[in-house]
Image (cartoon, rainbow, N blue to C red):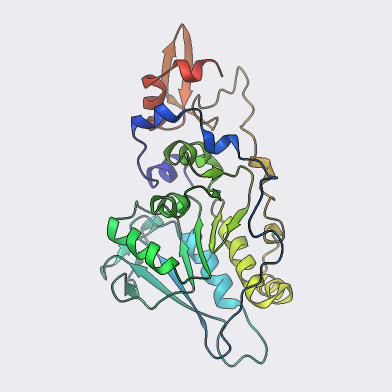
Length: 302
């Protein structure tokens, strides 16, 4: 996925974020951070019903972020169980079709006004949420077993206030953005997924599938999750290790011939640059150039 497009789907960064450039969220971001749900942390499925899973979507929803977990939940199979393990449906603010990534048209099953109460909510990368949608997430999460974000869906979940003071992760290209926009969130670099209470967040894209396998494991055990992965011919092992995105824990190595974004340390767009005290600095997205230009001294010493 194009980094520029990914960040455009996140909530826009105001230049006021430059006032929080000490990045307190990232200061606590280590792979050894305490997680409330360390250990198996099992969930109890209903005996005589399927587990309702709501996939919250809006314009620009990233397809793999929700279709990957959809297939994981869809294919979970428990021999002898009368009901399907999960009952899946899409939810949007209105009943109008939405256009997801790549032009995929989707007509939501329900709106936030009439959706069944979910036990699991999946929030993929998508457009910023309206106040009505944020209210729906907050209200529904009061009774969910898991409310999970995938990729920069973390910005939507963060905008509800539910992640305040808690650890979370997102796509590795958006760690700094999440920490700047929500400095009270403890952004976990290098985490495949993070769980805290009934909230969870996955890293980028396919990380959402690993978090979905983890949810299956919590409800039905490791054998069922493993068999589901085998059925899907999914060879990743990230669901067994929440810290398996360790390669993204640190910034990209910078050299004279390979500059990185002066704000977040990611790959650059060479058309975006600024000069400060005779030195040229490059950026990955225009918003980061604007943040740099507002307070270059905060970044020039890096």
